[in-house]
Amino acid sequence: MKNSFYLLFALLVPLALAQQLAPDVLVKSISEEVVAILKKDKDIQAGDTKKAADLIEAKIVPHFNFIRMTRIAMARNWRLASPEQQKILADEFKTLLVRTYSTAISNYRDQQIDYKPLRAKPEDTEVTVRSEVKPSGSSQPVSIDYEMEKTPNGWKVYDVKVGGVSLVTTYRDTFASEVRENGVEGLIKSLAAKNRQPERSKAGKA
Amino acid sequence: MVKAKRLCAVLLLAGTSAGCATSGGNPADPLEPLNRAVFGFNDAADRAVIKPVARAYRAVLPGTVRTGVSNFFSNLEDIWISMNDVLQGKFQHGVDDLGRFLFNSTFGIAGIFDFASELGFPKHNEDFGQTLGSWGVGSGAYLVLPILGPSTIRDGFGLLLDTQADLVFQIDGVPVHNSLYATRAIGARANLLDASSVIEQAALDKYAFVRDAWLQRRRNLVYDGDPPREREEPDDESTK
Image (tube, rainbow over all chains, first blue to last red; front, side, top):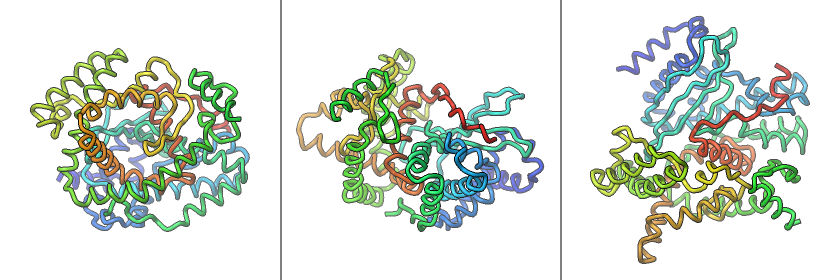
């Protein structure tokens, strides 16, 4: 009941309004919207990662800044890439993260998500939105933190930290050693190859 | 060469990481070739035996039973967690965690139910490696242990003590405590089945991905979820 209310609410919120939403309100409304869809979607629950990826593309991707994420993951090697390569890199990295996330959310069941109060000043342009998820089979909650920046198009996420582990910086060493060995082109090739691999079937299924 | 690396590891352990970077990627991983070999072995053992057993375990037992098993072992850890709280000067957590153990062991029927969490006494994550970290001991070189997986030199030492303090270890009778160990390990692996499928999808180089995630995770735990911000790479923002 509550969820369908949020779903209705989220559908009615035009994008123009999303641009003015406070960062914590934005994160909460998007995740509640997505969770409501997940709970109803039997295909995604059965492991249809393609459908999960479409959902992520439509609902979540518009609120992320993939250029900045890629730049952080590339660190000093970002400058070695031409503007054209930077665009391709950001695109491939986005695809990789969307596919990873679609594997993760197809495992979603009834885990409870709690949002922490936002600790930020009104004039801040970079904030951390904190939340906690209780995974099934364990009583210890896992923190999920969203690093966000204010842009003219509303607040955008540029990093997600799960249990303190950054989705973006975890790739730094991998990217750096790939560039060191095979150059920027080599990194693009290996990202593209990874993205062409067939989606993994749901591993949780026994 | 080996000697140089060992010296390197000792220096890293002492917290002076300067000048120890070898040809590999991460300066925190001077033992990379050795670690990769052990990681490969662990991965093969996981695929061949551990993961299939964990999957069967998850398929056969209903969720409530699995949670009960996981809670039972988790409850036994709370005493040692409480001692580590005290060693780190977190006395309130120490009292709470001892309270969790006493409460869950009795009202929670030998720890099968974690009522204390529901009453607002959340489980804490502590071990002796984190205690050493809170005392200012650097993590030292990254180390992949056979079967046990990712660790560091500091956390490996910590684990030796954790094992001695493990209540399951105190139980007499090798068959009993071996089967308890096995059940605990399989249960823990079953809880990670979803996470490991995500890693398979995420990683370009699984070894490096697990290492870098693990090192961040341990740092986060030492600082109880609120680590000081790491320096940003100087060129992160140059082409904004």
